[in-house]
Length: 441
Image 1 (tube, one colour):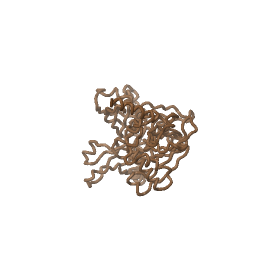
Image 2 (cartoon, rainbow, N blue to C red):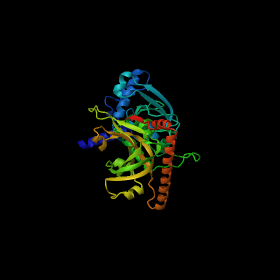
Image 3 (tube, rainbow, N blue to C red):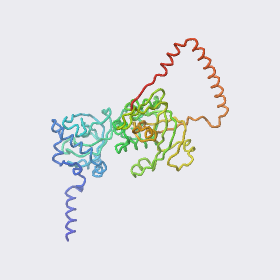
Image 4 (tube, rainbow, N blue to C red):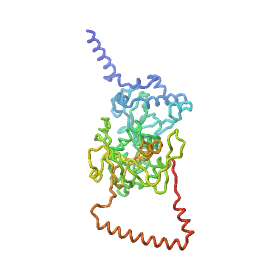
């Protein structure tokens, strides 16, 4: 009898809520907030309210994204869902930016909340004349009208004509990306806010915060569509040397680049997380340690914190990390055991891919030298090209050898003549040519 009564009460409650289960509210994920306090975060009319909005965004940013998504009532594009929203409900919002307003977080809160500003994004909804307002931490990048964004948000005010929401983060898909690389990634559905945020983690190890950006870029590179956006404009990657990525990485995040290198070691990395496997379409990817040419640049790497010794210096070549969902046929063919986890393999290559960021990792060289972690570029590869000479082209090799021998002989004679003619001037030229650039990492 008692169980029957309980069942009837549950049914009546569901009917009173219009068939909507109360578990869809996300308020319990936001420590310290209830419906009344959430409603008090809007409108942002003074610094006190701005502080409350900043606190709410901080709680949303710290909330578990999967838990927040699981509470979602659905998409706001469904008019029936929009009509029954209440404060604290979780809902999927998506639209095109019509306006951006920026607010400052009170100085007394910036350090604690790790937030200096936040934004109000006025969004035009797809296939509708309605608009909404979404408050969120400021996007990293040049956000402009016409860009598309989406988010798992909570309701602040559902009663006004322009419904108001708050989100811990929003996915950003710019209409006019700054670089070819960003255009290609956006076309593959990559959230560019994740790529922009990676700049703040330069020279650090890969972290949980890198997961979404790293795997989405890896999947995009695997299935990259390089058809021109404009038939009159070719999509050529930016040819670059490792030194530029080491010197100013912030200028190249997400850029589509071409680089020459030589492979050293190939490691098959297993992917255990089911969601990442589904995202990548497989249970592994490859990490390739390669060496890139430094030219005349010397890299200085600091030793451990407790070691006051001179920095470790590297010249000539520098380690570059390449990751890819798949290996090209010419590398796969040279692996003695295709099932091996680690393969030592030297092969000159030219790669095309996306620069992710500088990352740090432990390696044998730095350990042997008594240093900290190695710092180097991490590039997600979309295309591989072998730069090795054809194995069966003996005649061509002989011709090239003869030409090189003749060239070297002529160069020696010319050098002797030039040295005798003007020894002083030649010495000055050699001195200028030997000058190097030093970069501290």
